[in-house]
Every structure is written in structure tokens, then in C-alpha cells.
Length: 443
Image 1 (spheres, rainbow, N blue to C red):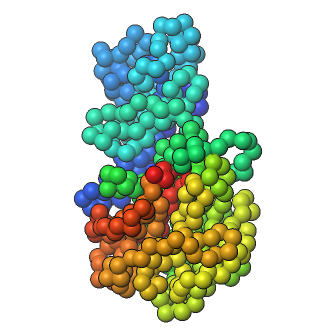
Image 2: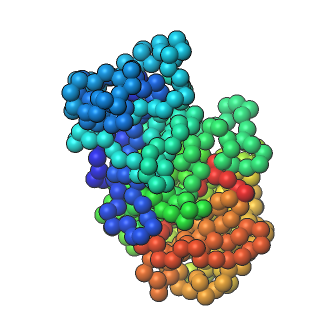
Image 3: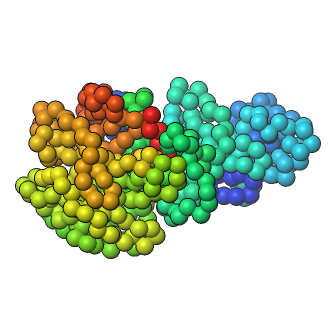
């Protein structure tokens, strides 16, 4: 993966993040500022450097005239080379004495190691910040790139510096809002969007309400020669789980991917378990009101996905942290295998592009039986060769490429009345995977 390295300093803690971006994104697809690398910021305008500028320049170069009383800068040249450490004690002291308001505008104290320039504010890019001297949060670059939004109190991404451990067991009685995902204070903002993955290994963040893609980066996974991404899902910690596909036939390998910068970590997953060579996957909560979740997969032999098989897929679950596959049932709908998506209401849905007609169906997680279903227009799904699927805001988003299309289009299926529309045509990417966590809104 090619990208820029950024050293960020807040208090005396250093976090490192790598990033990459797709330089050929078509109109409407916005690279997230050198891959959306993350800065660390904190309140009090108390940046101190020996060769920096004022707050307005975020010590990227000398505008000492704009500094507040708590800024000390000498000359112009960036954060102090030896250590680049911020005087955190001054921040805490000032807030405690009342001379600095913890809620006032934050000062960006980041610096780019291999260039010496401050990262630009690009729509959709995120910064880690301190909304109080001890509580960490996140701010997002405004859509018009005029500056960073307010610092929202939240824990920093667990995959900054290294990918986190993924789903964890529920060790408390903490529950999400009964109205659905997206309201749990433990959820990161970026865990509430849809993520998609292209055949060329580009990870993108999709904002349905804005009809906009933001490039996260190119996967840093060590795929074997000829292997390509096959499917993806995202857990509530905003960690993506990606299955690759061997050239020809055979079982895929599972990787853990950061949605912050597309960095990748191998897993101990044993491929081909229980006959699952390839599969679609989706996380679903274990029921309304709980933060516990389960990863479900549907698939089987790689021949299921060839378009020539009349067989039906199997349903299974994957346990964490061991990544063991446990067979549940054979699906009663086919041919072929669906892609999956879940939500915080405990539902699991499947998109079946090969059924006649194509359909979206509710899947019973204990028996594999199908429940409520939506019929899709066959004309839009003739000779499908790439597909992905996500539930967001009470609706379904289908990313589909047929043999007659140059790239994937985005379709929206209304979750109430079944209305089918095409909000985006020819995205410029062949989308093979989509993932959305149970933190996403369900209405």
C-alpha cells in the first residue's frame, strides 16, 4: 500500500496511521485527503513549538500573529523536531483554573513526517480530538472543506496504530437505544456508514443520504498472486472483515481491515471449514436492545458462485475470537448463494441475484428459512457478475454490475413499500463487497 505516514501528538501519546487513496476516482467520489489519515487535536489552544505558527496554521508554518495567549512559537517551520511533544500539563492547568474553556475551538497539533506540511481538511476526513482534557472524541471535515466540525465526545478508533480485536463479548448490561442503531454512545461515527470494496482492492465509505463515496484507501492485505476480494462485512467497532477469492476455484482467506486507513492484518481463520470455500457475510445483533452481535455467512463450494450451479447455499455462524465456522442449516431458496446484511434489530437479510425473479429475503437465523421478501425487476439483474448488499436507514442498498455495464450501479429498495430506484449509475468501481455495522441507523 502506498501512502503518507503521519505522526500525531496529543498529550504525550503518539498514534501512527497509514493511508492511501485512489487517484482515479470518477466524479462524485471524493478521496478522503491522502486517504483520510487521522490527526490528533485537543482543546485550549495550548500548542507550544520551537518553529511553529499560530493556531490558525496548526503549527504547520509561521503565522505567530494569529496565536492565542497560550500559543508560543518561535520562527516558522513546524512542530519541534526532537520529540514534538505538547505541554499537556499546561492544558489541564488552564482548564482547571478556568482561564481556558475546555469546549473552545481545538488546535490542530499534527505534523506530516515525510513532508512537513499539515494535512488539508478534505470533506469526510476525520480527526481525533480531545473534547475535554481527558475525554477523546472525533471531528469531521465540513462538506465544503471550510474547516473541521465540532469535536464530538467519543472514544478514539480502536484501530489507530493497530487494528483492534474485532467483536468482543458483552460484559455489561449496556444496551443500544431501542429505536435502533446509530444512537449507541459507544459507536464511532464512521461505524454508522456503509463500506464497499472494489475488485481492485479499493475500500470506500458510502454515505447514502449524500449519494457520495469517499475513498478510504487501497487494501494493504497480502493477497496471493491472482487473488481478489470476494466479500466483506463490518462489525460494530468499525473493523472490516474481508474474504479473498483464489484464481479459478478453491477456498478464500479471511483478513481483518481497518476502515480508517485500509491497513490489513492476517487472521488465524482456517479456510474451507464446514465446506465453506466462499461465502457472503453480514453481522447481525443478537436481538433488539443488545450490543452483542454474530457474524453469519452463506455459501459453500466455490462452484455455487459460478452462475452454473443449481445448488442452494448453506447458512453458518462464525465465532470470535477463534473464527470457527458452525453450520446452522441449508437455505430453502436458490439457486446460488445470497449476499448478507444485518441490523441492530437482530434481523438478517439476503440478496439473491440468481433466483427467478431476483429477490431480497429475511432469513431465519436459526433455521435458514426465508420470511418476508421483496421481488426485484429481472431486467436490472440480467447476467450479474458482481454484487453487494447493505441495510441502512430502513432501506436496502444493492451494488450491482451486469455483464453489459462498465461498472457497478447503486440501487435502493425501500424497506416499507418495496419501491425500487437507481440513485447512482456507473460508479466507476466494480463493487464486490459491502458491509454495514449494527451501529447504522435502521429508520
